[in-house]
Image (cartoon, rainbow, N blue to C red; front, side, top):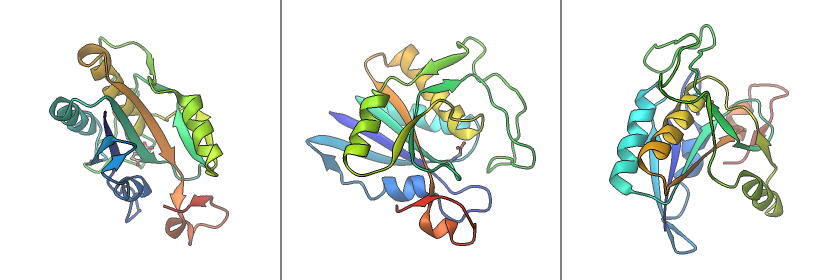
Length: 186
Ligand code: PCA
């Protein structure tokens, strides 16, 4: 069994991204499964291209994408990715792109559901003392874009590979100067 786990580069005003900081700490093997760790650029479409190259190269059984969602209070396992790129105003990606209500794939459905067992994942996290919840929106920024790209690619080319997305809160160090902001240890 092979599992690809990705995190993102830092974006916005942040100097680090807790998603990749956590992913890089994973061991190379968990319960006999090989873990392949990768960092993804915070750039619309380019992230999707990057994950496509990784999946083609690695031919994994499972792909888990991880991203930062500042302000969220727990690990959030995402249920759905939507066929839309809509950048909040004043918040372009790391290469200055700020798409507005754009369709990701013209021939894609309005949305894809994650193909990993989201409720079982949340339960496992909570059973292990980690606050977690199912989330019903990954937003319309680069994380949703990456999740949609992955699920489109899996549906079309890799039907035996499952894919999902986990949003994580700010790391404790990022919340130091943000009063009343939830955070979690890496
Ligand atoms: N979070 C952003 C993009 C990269 C990341 O880590 C998001 O939630 O869209």
